[in-house]
Length: 166
Image (cartoon, rainbow, N blue to C red; front, side):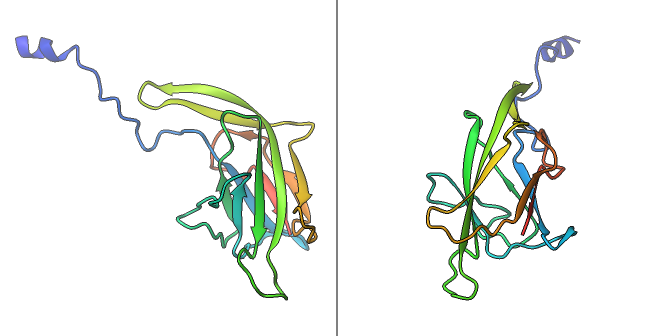
C-alpha cells in the first residue's frame, strides 16, 4: 500500500510526442496554367529564403520534383521572402533556370501546446496583401503565371494554402 502512494505524485515524462501538431509550414500546390484543375510537377525547383545560402529541404532534397511543397515561415516576423528557382542549376539555354520571388505577408498567433512541446505558431495571410510576386533582380520573365490563396489560415499541413499556376 505504501508503494502505491509513493508513485501517485509522479508525472508523465516531458517528451513531446512526434504526432503532436507543431508550427505548420505553408503548403503550396502547383497547377497547369492551361488546365487549372490538373496538378503539375515542377522540375528541379529550389526555394531559398531571402539571405540564406542553403535551399529549403523537402523530403530529404533541396531539389523539388513534384506538385506539392511545404515551406517554413518565420515565427518572429510578419513577412518572409522566398526565391523560387525553377530548373535550378540548369546550363541548358533552351530550358534555363528562372527565378521568381514571393514575399508572404501574415500575422502570427502563438498557441500553448503543452509543457513538453511548448508553443506552436499559426499564421494568417493578410487579406488585403497576402503576398507580393516579383521577378528576379535580373529579369527573366516570371515563370509563375498566377498565384492564388486557397486557405489564408495556416494551422496545419493537411491542406493546400497557396496555389501556383505555371
